[in-house]
Length: 466
Image 1: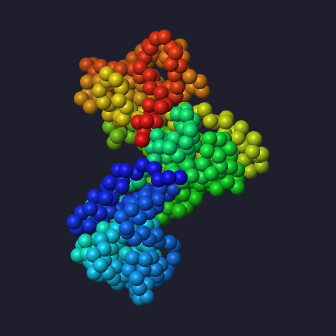
Image 2: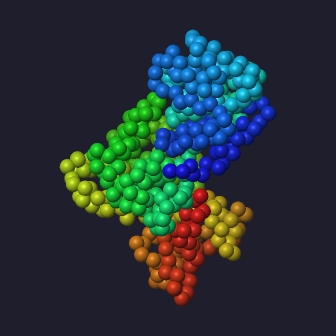
Image 3: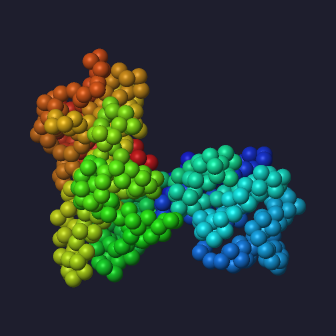
C-alpha cells in the first residue's frame, strides 16, 4: 500500500531537520499505527540513518546499530563499543567530520532502555553536547507510550525539555480508507472502517485477502482461530512495556456494555476507587476514552462514560472475545453469521462517532464553523447524538446520526426533523444561541422533492476526515 497522509507529522519532523542547529524529536504511538513507515519514508527522503532496536543484550544491540551506521560511515562497525556513550560520541564525531546532519532515527527505543536503564541520561548528554556541536537531527521513537511520554513529559526525566518536537502518531482518518481500498463507495468505506479502524497495518492485511469483500477479510484475519489478528488485542497488551495484560478485564467489561465507572467495577469485581490508574493507562494507550456530555467540564466524573476508542477493539470485544469457544469449532459460514448479528450495531456506533469527529471540519453552506461535537444526555431525559457550538458561541449544531442500509427518503428526513424538534434544546445552551438541526445519513435519495432538514452524507463526512 502506498504511503498515505502524515503531512502534519512530516512537516513537524522537517522543521527540526531544517533548523540550523538540528535537535531532538520524539515520536510515540500504539503498535500497528504506522510509526515505522512514517520514519522510514521520512528518513529515506532526507538521506538519514534509520536503525530499529530489538530485544537483545546491550552489546549485541550496539553491534547492530554500528553495523547499520556503516552504511553512512564506512568502517564504523570495525570498532567495538563498550558502552552507549562511546558509540554516540563516535557517531557525532563522524557526522561533524563529514558535515552529515542526519537525521539519525532510533526506532523502538524502549527495547534499548529496558536493558540499559542509563540510556536516557546518555542521550541527554549526547543531545546537549556532541549532537549539538555536530548540528545533528536526532529522532527517537517507540510503541511503549508510557515510557516514550515519560522521556519528554515527566519533569524528572533526563530528556525533559530537550525535544524540539514531540507527538503521538494517531490512526489515519477514515477519509483515507478510500485511497487504500480503491473503488469503495462512501457507505462501504464506513463499513470497512467499523472493522479495521485507522491502522494501516490492518488495511494492508485486508487488501491482501480481497479488497472489497469485508466479510471474507474479517473471517480470514480475525474470526478464524488461525487468523493473524484472532488474538490481536492480547498481543498488543503483551507487547507494551511493562505488559498491560492485567488491563484486559476492564476492556472486556467496556466491550460488553459497561460504560459507567460503577458498572465497570461491578463487572470486574473490584472497588471503583481502584480503577482510576488502570483506566488512565488505557486512555494513554489510545484504547479507551472518557466521554463527558456536552456542556460539562472534562474534569467532571459523575456523568462520565468510558468507551472503547478503537473500532477494531469494539468489534473484537463484541464479536470475538465473547465467542472464542464458539468460533473455535464453527465453520466459516457460521463465523460470518455471528459477525452479521452484531454488524449493524457496530457500524451504527462507528458512523455516529465519525459524524461527531467530522463536525469541526465540515463546511456547511450558510452556517459558521463549529467546534468539537459531543453527545448530550442527562438522567432520564432525551439524548442528542451531537451538539457543537460555533466559535463565537452564537450558533449551535444539533445533529442526529442514522445508519440505514438504504438511501434515506423524504419520510426518513421528516421523522428525523420531527424527532429533533420533539427533543427541544439540549441543556447548557444559552437562550440566545441559534440552533441548526442537521441529519447525518450514509446516503440520501437525491430525487426527494422537499428538504425538511439539512443533510450530510457519508461522502461529505469522509471528505472532512482526511
